[in-house]
Length: 195
Image (cartoon, rainbow, N blue to C red; front, side, top):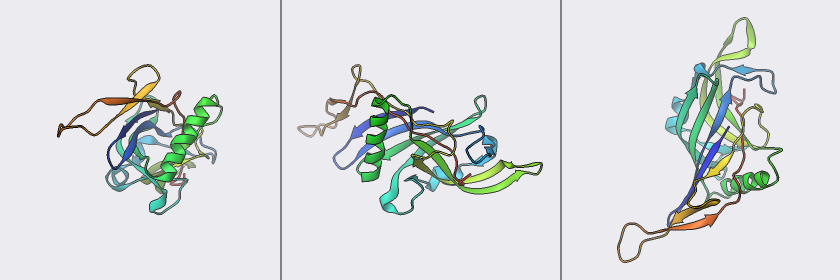
């Protein structure tokens, strides 16, 4: 799974745009398979959040989804979302992903979808055929090891990204200020329904 990171700073917020695989049809660590065509993301897209380690409450909200896309050929589902870097735990995930990337990516952070199983295969109850996704956790213990988050910055120059500063003299735009982020990042999983 790949997560694209585009950091933008505004006067009152800092955000990081992410993208990555949040679910696959691979057998997860609980021995289950989640059929991607049966996942209903409508609530998640309209009202759901990205949370910290399946924890509830405002302090554990890391961000929210922008777009969900299924990839039938690869039997996976991807997300584009926004991390709210003013949230301490979102900043913690961002920093951890950077550190893991610098260490050589032998481990990764993961995604885990949360919701309810609506239907299982009658011949094999380990196959989830329909489920409703409510939220998605960013976790250090992904149930589906085939999903992982990699943060990739938007480049201004090689190895740099930037953020926009407030404009002077009443203008609406100002120059981007380069900012070093290091080399990429990493995160992943797809299991919660907790499937």
